[in-house]
Image: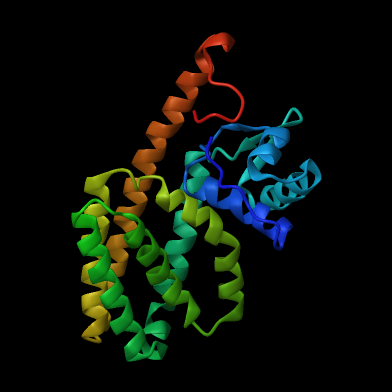
Length: 240
């Protein structure tokens, strides 16, 4: 397991953020057992602070408790599909409002960031695209002018980040997503409402397809791991 140590500045928040980011970035894998004492040593913090952070992460839906043991959440295929469908509904409904409200300079900035991410991808760097991916979808909600939808989306955001990132080690899938984002941003820059809506609809549908395929494999691997004799299973807080 790899968790970056934290410094003693707003320590409880940093512990929470460090563990959350390790889950979202798939450094801690779905179904992986977590041991608070080991996390405390790696983070250079007390077990009480780690337990407090874990409590928040349980509330966030990123850690689950089973038989008094802690595990990184293992989504079911239904829960993943439900999550992505909610995103789909919210973003498609709010896109026309966002297109009318987002300043031109925001779209131009997103276009420039996407171009930088495309160049980075060509040399093997996918992190910049991941940031642009999240920011593009967030832009729609940020300018939707509906506080209730913003709250709903905020409650889903961390789980969405984790689910979307699940296939970021697949070069072809990232290439496909990059191409879809380019079509979306280009249409938005032209103020073509129909083409923008079609590009977003296509991207959301394809993203759901890619993620569902990937999680089917992940869940299959987890089931195979669980069928192994106990001595052959990977234990503790190491990666699955």
